[in-house]
Length: 319
Image (cartoon, rainbow, N blue to C red; front, side):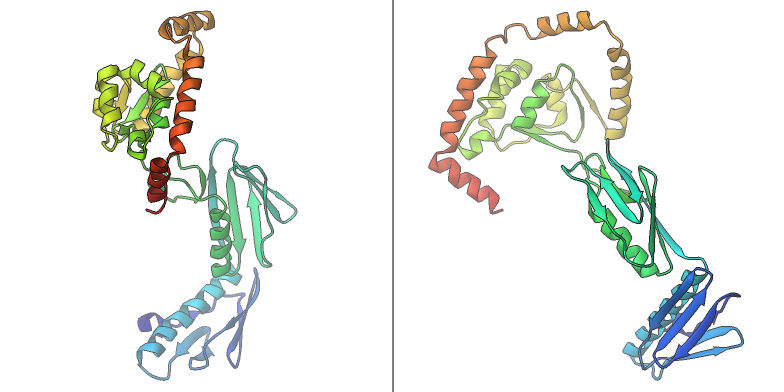
């Protein structure tokens, strides 16, 4: 940091600097700000340059030297041009607006989030874009981080608030228990190669009684038995496709989204009556499921109250 500290700062036209004891007042077209600096640092304003000197070469003074110089430089840039940080909102129905100086966010919660920025900060919003502006670089960063924290981008769909240009590393989910049942209940299931599946109910002392009929119908009795008995094993996506649980498997979520769009567009324009007829044929033989699933749910309810299951759940929660 000492190398940075030794570099003098050019004072641009239109910027005035006043040094009094341990306080620097920087004024410019965008405004004015006061900057405190450590008493061991010495500031000099001469011939249009601001320089910082340190009393010794010890580690602490070298660190303070560079830090002080950088803070002063940011202050000059702030009052001259200002700083801004842009954020993006991703998610269906997620949006932002500004009323007065208040930022109002709709982020999928049961309520709106209202945020009043601190003095010196200006916020503009255009539905899915937010801009935070001010002369204090640190404060602009802190406010931007606060706004982002209201709904950080989640790693599966990327929904939430992110910095503009921020890369959000996505995770490919696995499906367990009820998730496997949901996949089984679809007529055409897309998945990525990372979407392993298992029926883990037996491991905690119950069974996949409710999702069982749908899973068995989809993959067959033999595969269903394997998943049920081997309750701790993850069955990979290629296995799930081979057994008919997944219709198509892709290398990435991006590739999958493209193919979903290709199928959904013509499908949405298909004859509705024909689709209803096909649905009845494909689900023929499941008419008794309403009663069956109620009986299965009652069985699960009894087992979940057993000591074995209670202990298994507590062990899982403590991990």
